[in-house]
Image (cartoon, rainbow, N blue to C red):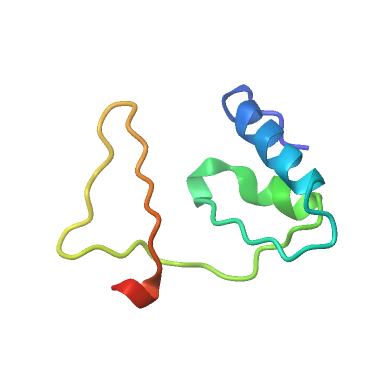
Length: 77
């Protein structure tokens, strides 16, 4: 199991939500940098696709402790 201190809060939250969705279709979009992909595969949620970051023009760069997130779908672009 992935044991990164930085990620432990995310793992606990994801594991809690997954425990409430047993037998249901689950989709989780995680970045490669998150380090969660291997852990998700280990617990039975395999990676089925890769995506590219989409941006109009140059994608924004992270600044300081900021984390980029978006709730969008390719169909909206």
